[in-house]
Amino acid sequence: DTAVSQTPKYLVTQMGNDKSIKCEQNLGHDTMYWYKQDSKKFLKIMFSYNNKELIINETVPNRFSPKSPDKAHLNLHINSLELGDSAVYFCASSQEPGTIVGYTFGSGTRLTVV
Amino acid sequence: GQSLEQPSEVTAVEGAIVQINCTYQTSGFYGLSWYQQHDGGAPTFLSYNALDGLEETGRFSSFLSRSDSYGYLLLQELQMKDSASYFCAFNAGNNRKLIWGLGTSLAVNP
Image 1 (cartoon, chains in turn red, orange):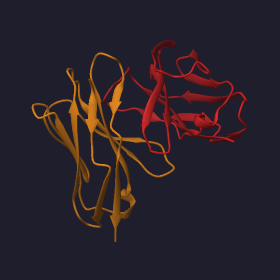
Image 2 (cartoon, one colour):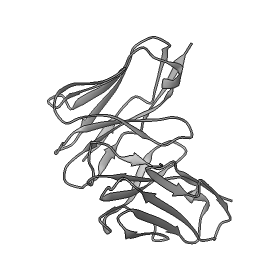
Image 3 (tube, rainbow over the protein chains, first blue to last red):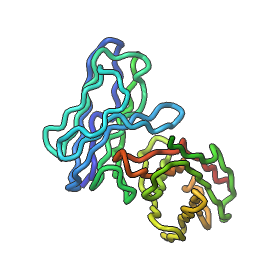
Image 4 (spheres, chains in turn green, red):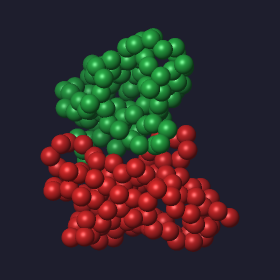
């Protein structure tokens, strides 16, 4: 019973392509996030949704577009992929935004743009 | 502004005790969290401190001093499997997100 599941786990694609990553949580949490982790391991928040409402939209190129059809799902679509987009993308969820009580992360999607 | 500092690397031996420090700067503060991440894995939540003092969870403890803007994660009876990156993160209260440190890579040697 995976709490936060994201697919695919690995994604290798060419520059210029468009790709999507999907995330689902079965914890009943109200808040979901997308994080990008680069090779230096810095966890950078990209987006956050609380009950389907976008509440955090960091300085991210508008080639990245999140979508939350319901509070259990959060998807990330990336247009015109660039080499610099290569990273691990983590979905996470929590009971409320920015809580210190614990985020639950998905296993990550390793995106490689060639 | 808001920032976190933690050491980039720490090395210890099996069976030892190690302390990973975290100092922060912020005008608002609502608590500190700790996460563990193994290579190739996802961050997993370890512990949090909303108030000053020590919180113990098995071999791991976390401490917070709000007056010193300082916290630490204490790992006892180190095992090889504790080799991982450890992140501290705090909630500044005004922006509905955690502010993350850059992580501390812990290497446990035999």
